[in-house]
Length: 299
Ligand code: AMP
Image 1 (cartoon, rainbow, N blue to C red):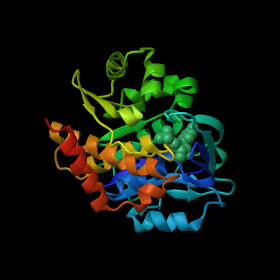
Image 2: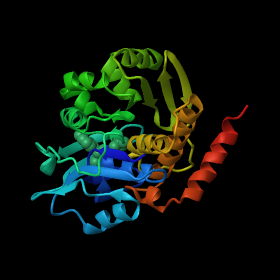
Image 3: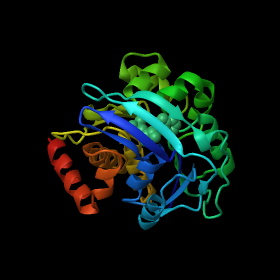
Image 4: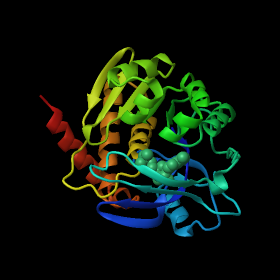
């Protein structure tokens, strides 16, 4: 089964205590698609401006990420500027320029089938909802978001929550959306709004998973040095849904494995700036870390 991913393709300018990069490859769909491509063929739906370097499109194609749905419009590519300080647990957004994303309504490419799985990576929930209605997905539907949309598009987000199978967000966003300080209460509140499964990502503290009124935990793959946490959440979502797309049946054990892969893939992203770490990793590197994490959690 293929995985269709819609989200941002961006040029990011990011500063962390370990360095600074301007106009580096980023965007929720970029991280999610690269991560998912370790397991599954991907259809990417997004938009870039005429300043978007061709070499990135070549890179997507080489990784089995179909770019038929990556539109090129006159104008500038989406830009995001952010800074991380201290333990780098949260990004401080300095500026967001939607540019070609402003009012963007994509054409769904003919190779996108309703039986595909769908990942609505972080982007305006109005656009996520529009795609959902157009694509009429029958496969697994996952959705990610961020604080900006919880603040400004809460109504649209709550509408989407009713329709998705899997909803992913980080701890601060879960608290903001639910109004609950306690994350178990936040997870319960979000599940109560309709999502069949909920993942609350907690950075270096792993993630919480909620399904059928129960919860479980998945640890992060801990590293001695993190350079840039940008895209960790998107990478987690892509790894998890990419892995699930290749499974015949989604059992609780498969879900557990998909969460572990999400965690592992995210560890490659945070090691280096932009998507460099993720792009350098091989399938063997991923499996090595998976085995190590598996050994660490065994009792
Ligand atoms: P994460 O670190 O997982 O929260 O995601 C960071 C990525 O999200 C960056 O590469 C940004 O380009 C992208 N991003 C930031 N703000 C937005 C936004 N408002 N809509 C869509 N993508 C965004």
